[in-house]
Length: 334
View 1: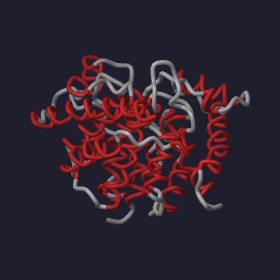
View 2: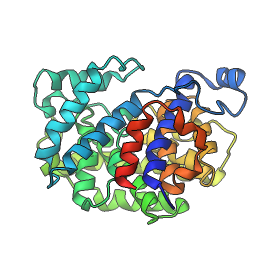
View 3: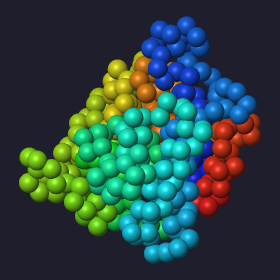
View 4: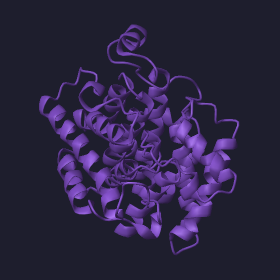
């Protein structure tokens, strides 16, 4: 299908904008304000997004900078992403309830500290993978580059192994859908297989000595914890899909999405409940009791990668915030 990269990056922004006003509301308040289905379309002109899309753009535009000067290596992308993240943190538009982990880590980067010292080592918040979609959209990367880059962009702020593993799984879900390599109903199985296959793979070229901390004897032991926690989240996803209750709060089944593996699992649940209806998928994410904007933005990234740009309401593209920057990334990778 045409425009799958555009569909994914715009879908991320659409879901983010749809979930923005419901992020800190419980289900009762969402239903009272918007009805049982939640918000029907992004609000405003422009329809404002949150830090999820802003940081996704920082990752994506950094990738464009790096890929124009090959080869793509950790040494090339590190200063580029550092600068992009710092520019985001200092922007006057950074007023959308950004995550404390991101702000704290990027403050350390701005002070000139090495990234492995600046990162918040024990954080696995959803900020690790809410912004990773562009890594899944770039064509031509090797498996090692895609895996390493997905984990590294997370590690710049979130140093917990589960944040790294969940980011890689998110990027690969986007890539497989964009390329038509995995059907939606096969995604949970494929992701589970990747957890097992990568369980003891530590990307030292990208992550350096991040693994070293008290109580951890080897890099393999460090990264295995992340994959194991992601497997547990996929178990909850499988159980929720067996019931397939489209009307229930998805967070009750797979978690509130405030942490990385739950953001992945709950966004996948929203997408897989409505694999051929992207608007319904992001509405389900927005009408949830957890981190609604992050859940809906990832659901939108999955849906758009699967169905392409034409699956979204055409009029949304004209009024989503940062439309020109989103379109530039989509054009580059379609």
